[in-house]
Image (tube, one colour):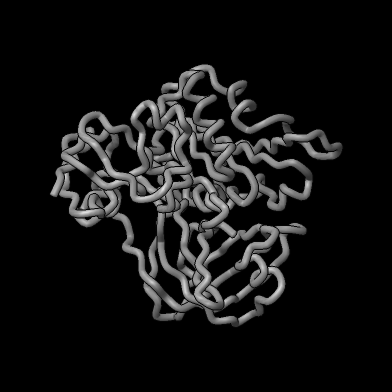
Length: 331
C-alpha cells in the first residue's frame, strides 16, 4: 500500500492497481476529473517525488508534459509513496452520482448536425447537479455516452442536452435516426468537476467550441441568479465555429449579463463577431491577468491550445478550468 500526498498536505492511501483518482475519491478527497479515460487531461498532476504505474494510455498528455513528469490521475496508480502537485477540491458539497430511468420529452433539431434533447425523470426522482457537470446516458444495447447539462436547475425534473452528430457514432445513429418521444433510457450522474469556482468580483471568460456552449449556458443561467455580493466583475463568452450553422444558439439572449462574441475560424459574410480562434481573440481583451478566470469547454485541441496560449500570456495556470470533449465520451 502506498501513500499519495497532495500539494496542500492532504494524503490518502492507494491500494493495488487502484487509480490515484479513484483512491482519492474512496478516501473522501475530490480531485478534478472529466473523461476518466486518459484522454482529456482534466486530472493532470505533476509527480514531485516517488513513482507511479500506468494503468492505460495517457493520450491526453503531450510528449513534453510526459518528460516534465506530468501524469493523469485517472490512468495511474502509485508504485511507491508519491507527492503530487495537485490540489483537492476542498469541502465543496458534490452531489453523488446515481443511476436513474428517464424518458425523452423533447427532440428538437437546432442545426443540421445538432439536436436538443430534453430528458424527463420520474416525478419522485431526487437529482442534484452543479451547473457545468455532465451525465452519462445509457442507450439501446447498453451504449454509454457523456453529455453536458445545458440547464442550470432541476426544478422541472428535466435535463437539457445538446448533441452533435458524429459520423459513424453508434449513439449518434440512435439520436438522429431512431430516437422517439417517450423512449425509455437510463442516465448516470452528475459527473465531472467543471463548475464555477469563486465568482466574486472576478472577470470570467468562457471559451467554447461546438456543443461546448451547453455547460456555458448552464453556468450563465446560474450566474444570473447569484446574489449581488457574489456577482463577477464581468462575464465574456467567446464561442468558436467554422460556419454560421455552428452558432445554433442565440447566446446574447441567455440571462447572465454577459458580453457575447461569436468567433469564426473561417470568414463568412453576415455573421457579426471576430475571425480567428477564441483563445487568440481573448488575448486582445485582457491587459491584467491577475483577476481573470477562464472556463473552456469543447474540442480537446482548443483547450490544449487555449491553456498554452493564455498561460504564456500571463494567466495563472490554476485559474484555467476546462472540460474537453473526447470522441469516445461525447458521440
